[in-house]
Image (tube, rainbow, N blue to C red):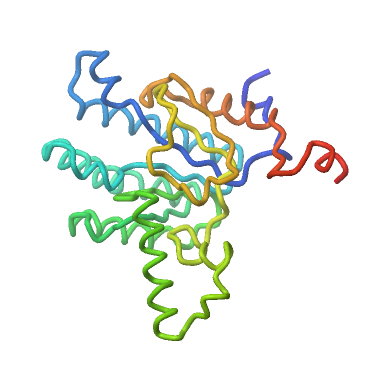
Length: 248
């Protein structure tokens, strides 16, 4: 039996988020430049998206570029933006063919105009798709997102548009970039690092985490399936007891 066949479709997470880490270390291990490592990482993106489509996953979020990544060397940032542009040019037709709807979250105004415009075009072109919702986190950090939400709420309270006593978890979530997305059920991080690096902090409050030593460019379909199989073996209690869960 293949790993894909071991996945229980009735227990599939609705939303999987991935921190794609290890491109630089993969490049170093192979005697290549960091930029070539990022290029190789694109192949893993393709494989995981294909796997997500094959199992009918509803939402997949990929952490592609953080706000902190702007502090990297200029040549690496330029290369990453180039890779993004190339991927949008090369993959839009594939997204449409596979009924994938692309969206993006983050401080997109910081992107180069050319990249931002091409991204907007692809988002618009795939807006009619009804299959996998592919979310790319670009120029994103959770602290930036939460601060932005807090400022927007504070302004509306000050203007009398919003009653401070109406602010609860559900309302706050409507001011986040992910307002129209379910919270992630599973967060995967590659490369052996055991941290979430400012990614979906609010949304991941009750997510299951899966950490693997595999560097992102080596992460393939079977590795993705292994993460899902591990997820399906866990008991999700959301603060309740096992007995309370079993009574349902």
